[in-house]
Length: 128
View (cartoon, rainbow, N blue to C red):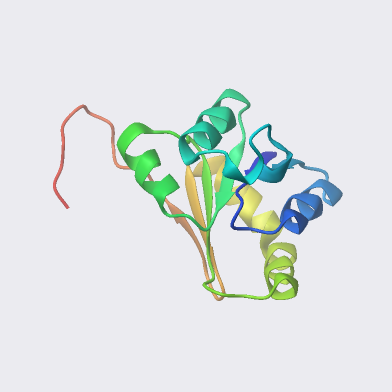
């Protein structure tokens, strides 16, 4: 699977994903580095068929409103050490991959992993 890891997460997340056989890029590797806008990150991820990995829920809003990015892994752990974060990824990576193959948005928390299904796209707006 291909990933684009956002600036709020350590580069070690992208490195970890690569060691597990995935194609992962961190925003620090992009032309604008960690100053790359969310919109540019989302567009690049979609163009390259990558999953955006981020703590930034603004990506989720973009996904719901514009379907951009198409695929998203939200890290909802709050403040966490890099060691604990990488442990979570290591413990749940197989499940994360399975869920991302079926759902556009997956949320990784300290004690939960949740797949979020998109509402049906029938052209009608719905209220919450």
